[in-house]
Length: 296
Image 1 (cartoon, rainbow, N blue to C red):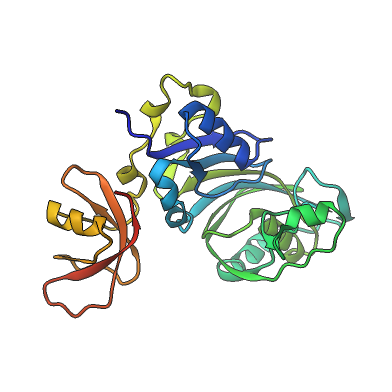
Image 2 (cartoon, helix red, strand yellow; image 1 turned 90 degrees about the vertical axis):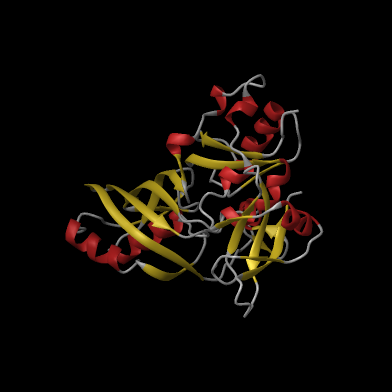
């Protein structure tokens, strides 16, 4: 019988919400047990991971991965949504912005920065989505929070249109980065386009468009649970250890593993059994692992 667990990588079109993608995959897969590894703005395109079956339990472990985006910003106008779909709320000159000034400003955004998310976002305020409150005309205030910017590369400088690539941590909003970059060079800006290029170990070369999928061949395209956690450290266990994990017990493995980091535990059939984490242990024989998500 065909397993109904795994990960499929979708190259999302513009104009679709993340839930639109999940709904389409549910129909193709013939199951409602479908989730995703991280949302994309409706107007954004690119890589979106969709998890099926027991792998919906693993989504939180994948959203911690680094992401790479290609994006284009437009200097001189700010919008209420911080992208091209919104209404212009402010205009400012941009002719003074040089490549050198922009690159100097970009350097100030590397590392851990404080970022205020866009009010048109899926974040919740008092139990309600921020974008729903904003569209209802209510005042929305979101607090700044730390995000990681690992790399920021200028790929095209044709002001007022500027293209960049960013490698960042989970929780980073490209629209907010563009907004803040515009201010940093003495102008304003909004995002014209966003394309997610990669998430962790997965990139667009592995992704399929929804119109390339059919019910007959859908499961042939699904990556196994073990494959979807390729970026995690892993250990292999024997049958006795597998039974212990199935009962939610800790196990001792003959490997030196990082503390607290998620570990992929694989059985003799190369199947993912669980995600576990090393507990504080002074056992000279190895690392003691405790279950975080058990899949059997």
